[in-house]
Image 1 (cartoon, rainbow, N blue to C red):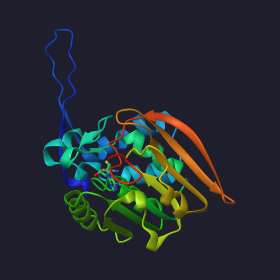
Image 2 (image 1 turned 90 degrees about the horizontal axis):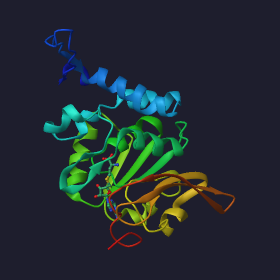
Image 3 (image 1 turned 90 degrees about the vertical axis):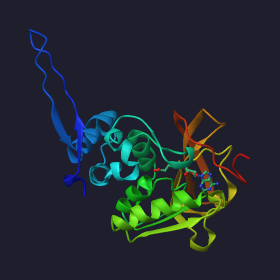
Length: 237
Ligand code: SAH
């Protein structure tokens, strides 16, 4: 996968004469390993399965060719049509809130580039992902197929309605911001299940984790974040 592809990464060090330049090339695999250590593990996410998944999924293949060399930087990147692929740490934080062990059926809203989908596919049994924009969905589909993910099901539509045919889901991850938890998603979350989603207006939201247990729902605020809006019914106009 990444091993045949290289990105140039210049590390410049000045000697006493100020002239010595050391430039070395780091493979995408090396950059990814460093991303996991410095951006994810160092910030307190230590689950071994989750870290392995982040070491494996080639984030640079989910962005446009001209952005590949920036794929492992500590920030979000633009995808097609004005959407974004979240900062690696935020993807890791959201994923960790789902507490996946490998046997789950997961619903994802907002497939975007497909990067988060691939991580979920590494960590759960089956992933059902809904994306509103057909162009993004098609691009995500071809990336995921090329990488060989067979446990991913993609659908085009308004994800805030969930995917009732396949409900209930053991975990739900929403990667676009809603004004409130969309009711259909709460209904489609299995008892004992977890949901991670940003809630709030455009430009500033709070990442929430939601637990459903014995019919009751509890919710906890985790961190400030900025996501693109969830568009449509149960989202923003
Ligand atoms: N997780 C993605 C990032 C998604 S950005 C990744 O790893 O790349 C948020 C995505 O949500 C965008 O692609 C946007 O088109 C999509 N979206 C917004 N409103 C939606 C809705 N109502 N239903 C489904 N997808 C929606």
